[in-house]
Length: 225
Image (cartoon, rainbow, N blue to C red):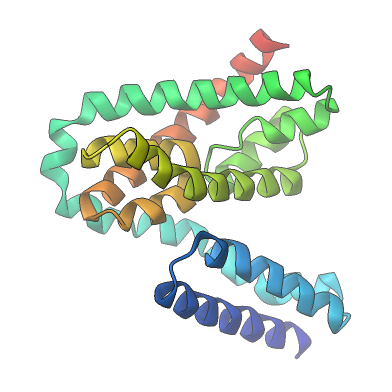
């Protein structure tokens, strides 16, 4: 019963946060930030066992895969744009994925972080499930990787719009690649606020970044260490 209540509570928090963000679209009100914070506060306040909360909300986590697959709908609607810019998107996402991984490792070494933390931080620009899988294969801690992924997404949502504005990026393909490559799901959601085409390109860039990171991570880690 407690597990079911945790599930209902999390869904209710998300619905409320979503409505709040639609009315006042501020970065600090994004559900990506408000939902985890409120959920943690309620779990701590009511002293809910972590096992009970995890048991009740595991179904939500497992919906990440189907939600990603659902992005096929806008992809189909904008297939002409994708075909026309396939090479540009592929090269940009590939370069972005490699640079994101390399800067994460270099930053970890510069800060003299623990090796496990470095391995956990390295795949931060991939989508959560893939980043956690990469982290585990490298020897990192998947739960810490998830935290770095969330931080990366939030930074992308905060810094992305000013970058678009300052550099006057008006092309939807460029906007989409920028958000999808740098901040995965969160960036893709933000890109859709600029339009359907930008959001669609972002979703493609997000998937490509994740796949390239997955394939290149072991080699890059060997080369950089």
